[in-house]
Length: 57
Image 1 (tube, helix red, strand yellow):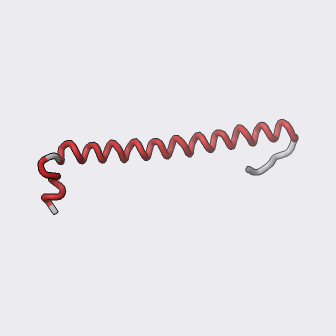
Image 2 (cartoon, one colour):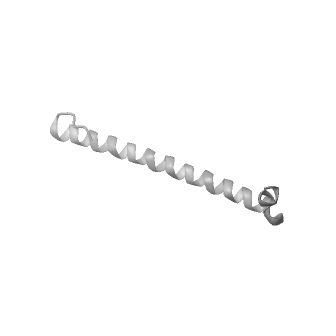
Image 3 (spheres, helix red, strand yellow):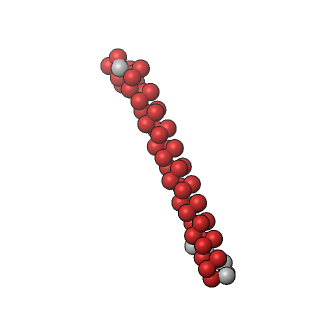
């Protein structure tokens, strides 16, 4: 197991790369969810302004 974690001597390059990749993926997911929420809110506001009543999206 320790040999696997050492990655043949390249662990100091491999593990930070995995960590950075994981961080970027999480940030990307959170940004996409935030943008989706904001878009839904803008559409909801537009529908309310156009129709005069609240519509669930």
